[in-house]
Image (cartoon, rainbow over all chains, first blue to last red; front, side, top):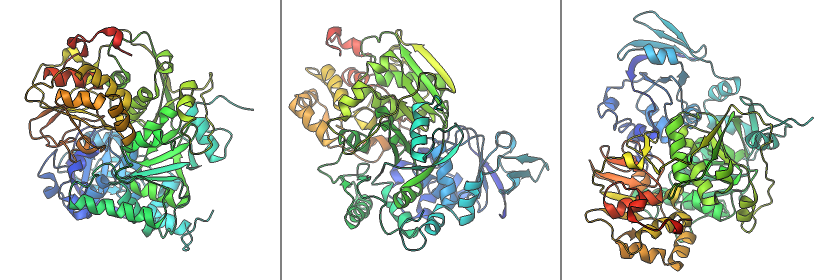
Length: 171
Length: 429
């Protein structure tokens, strides 16, 4: 899997999906339209500062609240290459994997990485490197079945393969 | 040999074709029922098509409930609603709830006998955990997960450890299920049960009606839980038996099941609780809330939009007036709730008090429509989340409370203890 490189943007603990993409925008369907409003209730300028491949670093329980898949979709479309958090809320965690937004759980990196730092991320090894200090962090690697979904390119192609092309479930 | 398990473990084992499961284990489970709403169904439908799926695994095991932006609040919402409606027609989805039959999904499904004890239920809505009140293993998922389950009739789940919460003591007047769950979230925090199953038990839960149990299970997700469950008992079966649309097999925790933790809380001293802005965990007794003027009171939602909730609110509002300068919105959770409230004179009491009563919708709870908040406005609501911007403007303030506290607040214009209205205690159920 490719290595990601980008600059760090920081947010705090318990960032909920209403803050990631407020309910008032949920009638928007195009990812690029959602992306313009990502995290705007937290920081109206953030969406504009994110460059493709940048890394969002969060505290604990990132993505809590609503099950809206619009949240990881908006982050991905805004250019976020990876989210590193102390911990993730469970629905967000699944949604991120399913829509192909890389995420890593690493409390140390979430605590220490500073805003603006250049980092590189190797998802396969769960390795996060602070390019400035040279410090490397290790996140828990994905369990095998999750890697299988990611390797298939997300849940859509994974199920497509399971359906065997004729649209009927094969077991 | 059989080994002791919690209700959550038993349901997952049964649906994975296993004798038992362990917390942390990943299991592939058969799903009994699926649901999506007008916001989450369209992306699920798109994913379903991209997956190459041509039919829903079982047309009688999917509910599509347009409730968030329905009746259509604007053209964009009307388009989402049409996508959902067209799919329901095309796939002959048995449980599609059109405007006129619909209500808030988590009120409608239990009352329609579509969420049953012992089942695995996935919903593209985080408050799907509500059905744990009926003894189902029910959890929220995203739209793509739901699409996969629509195609395959199964999903993968990690078996959560179960934490048991036993409530004992004697509740004070006006203290309700909402107060117990707010208190719980206040004590453990918004990630206090992250990835766990919360099991609600003890004499107070055993004595609680189904509406109260649904209020509690509904908010399990606000503590980060995967689901919140109540072991099915006579109360459950009495509710479910006349409604059930499928056969079902209830499961109950074994007495010697292993729990991650067991909390035994005597709540005899508990006052009605309020979550202050902007997190459900900012919980204080109602008597400690600053007496600032409140602009809007909202009674409804999947947390507290049931008949029992409206009855309590009506008892306090009947014969009184909503405070000048305050707007009080009442939204019954379903057509059935609305009709019964009408028959009982509850709707009349609300209207005479100066409330508005609207058709069922999630509307204001997600800042969608029917009562969105302006910058700086303060609202007391019976909903489940008070995040920044949840009910409208980013700078609005949302206090979470029970229907009784909301009703008392509507009358007094500031966050108030229901006892301040002097309604005789013996009238309290």
